[in-house]
Image 1: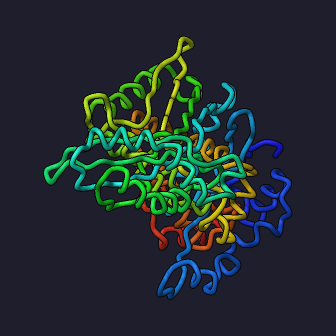
Image 2: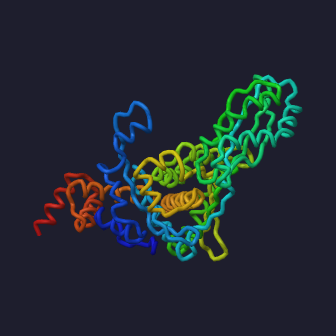
Image 3: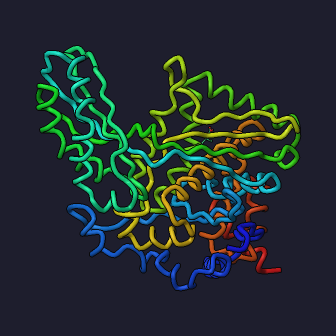
Length: 422
Ligand code: MEV
């Protein structure tokens, strides 16, 4: 990868954009052919992925530019149906470049599975019996996945919790598993099912559920970035952005929308790489609980000593590179190749960087002119293209539609006719 800074990228044709991406990333240009609707996921492939297949759904894939993550320039494919998202992430990523881009740190890729035990007469003592049997249970679980153990993964710990409920007191065992480059659901679910009978025997009860938890709070990725004060629009914009973000910290109603903005970026990259969007979303929202137990903002924004804006975000990020749709979906494979990531952790880093950039973009728009103007100009671009505007005509058509406040295909047709008659 040379640089992800690509001014004028949006004004290129789709073919030209692909050529630029291939050139920048060093990928063979043909590697991106699968991004065409007629070359992507085939019906036959889809038929092997889920049941009762009747078709496939196209979602636009845009490429976010300007990202530097842990010192590496990266072009980020984003699958989203929402206008403004790709442009907004790219724009705010640009504002971090002179300050080193995005920096991340992560825990080990630890996923957890739960085994629920019922009808235990002595829950506290059962908890200790299970902890005393940790070595035996860990060995039994590891034996289910020798390949994972060979790759340096496997069970790292056992946690046992005693949970009183309205029905009875449950004993719940957590298997903590290092899943390496997998998302990990299959690995931990297989282990949980395999050890459950022995867990039931040791606890002296009946096991019921054996399933991973999507509250993947031992598999965290943290990202931070400094957004340049002048590029953001000055000191007042920074102050207003900090207040806008603080609103989400103290109010669950605002937090839900603020966090939705973060997920606009995160889900788009997770989907583009064939990962499980619902798992990431469940993990993210369950992590957004403050010290007082109420739902809060996933991110924090502060002003640093230089007056620039510092954004931080910490979330579970259970994405994988092996298994699932990431391995079978041809477009997901091309997107992973475009990212140039070699590990699930590197993918998680980029996903988180996009989440933070997306969040900063929304907060900046809301704290300044509002989001409708940006939405409208992108909407106008779509209308201009739909009306048949060529690449070199789009800007003029958009400008005139916005000026006349009529963003409609018939207006675009009239403007085009006028432009072409000159
Ligand atoms: C729209 O998809 C996302 C926003 O509502 C996020 C936010 O309010 O922070 C703009």
